[in-house]
Length: 320
Image (cartoon, rainbow, N blue to C red):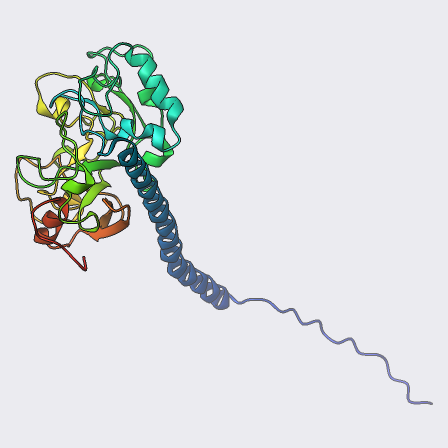
């Protein structure tokens, strides 16, 4: 009998993960995600900071074009110390927003805001004596004035104090001290700055900085009187936070950067609503008078910071 043997079936082998192996893979994936997430967040913040810097550069270009036309900067206010339109409205024709400016002029009628600062004007149209009827051009949301890191709504749409204004995260520098006269801007009408007045040098003087902090360290909200708006300050009651600072259009250097986000000590207990700050980690961005943009850390020396905020104190700062 020939040697013929029956075929033997090879037992099938099934490959797969054990429970331990699966847990190890999940743990590795979790570690990778934990390592990747901060990098993604940092990349997003870097993009937001770049957009914010581009906004400030566009504002700087508008200010320089304004100066080329009028031989001075726009006034910090158009109604004495109590509100009115300010630099954010006056540079509109120089930043490709002529249509918004023309709408403001139409709204103002016989009392238009004066870019030369030689005459007064009506109060800013973002507030109509406590009664808001129809949203005006001041409620326009302009991307140039909005930092993408800020969390406030782009439009202050609130019955509180009767404001309805497009947001702005950028305020003019008033300098340092209670006179508010040594900065690049001043809220008073007819207080205008020429480049020749910046004796410390355009590259050593802050013109515009980021704002957005809430009053008294509270979280920013549409109901906050210091909610920032690009058009100017409205007419209000007797409270200074309403007439002078609501919405905030100029800020000063007596308060450290990001005071309520980990910044330095408070120099003036009455200055909590007047300082610069942002939601960028570690500091805020500033436009210098020469058109350059710099990120200043909240740990910057207060002496250096104060000197940068003054245009004619004789203390020239370098390497900041």
